[in-house]
Length: 92
Ligand SMILES: Nc1ncnc2c1ncn2[C@@H]1O[C@H](COP(=O)(O)OP(=O)(O)O)[C@@H](O)[C@H]1O
Ligand SMILES: [Mg+2]
Image (tube, rainbow, N blue to C red; front, side):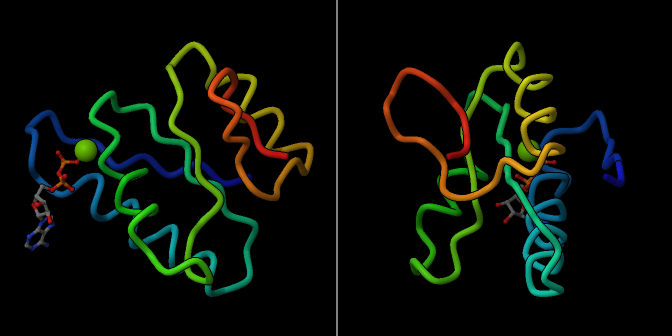
C-alpha cells in the first residue's frame, strides 16, 4: 500500500478535492481503492454517495479511532461494499 500525504494547514485549499480525484484515478486504473473519510463534515463521503451507483468508490465515514483497524482490513484485502449497519465502519 502506497501512502501519499496531501497536507496544507489552510482549510478550503483543495486537499479533499485532490484526494478524491486521485481515488477516482486509482479506481479507473483498476487499483483496489477505499475511501475512508475521517472528517466530521464528511464531504468526501457525501460526494461519493451522490455519484451514480456504478461510479461509487467503496467508502466509509469513520472516526479517527477506527483508522488503524480500517487500514489493516483494507491491507488484508477486505474490500467490497461498506457496511451500512450504523454501528460499525467496515467493508464487507
Ligand atoms: N482546483 C480547484 N479549482 C477550483 N475550486 C476548487 C479546486 N479545488 C477545490 N476547489 C473547491 O474548493 C472548495 C474547498 O475544497 P476542499 O477540497 O474541500 O478543501 P480542503 O479539503 O483543503 O478543506 C470546494 O468547494 C472545492 O470544490
Ligand atoms: Mg477537506
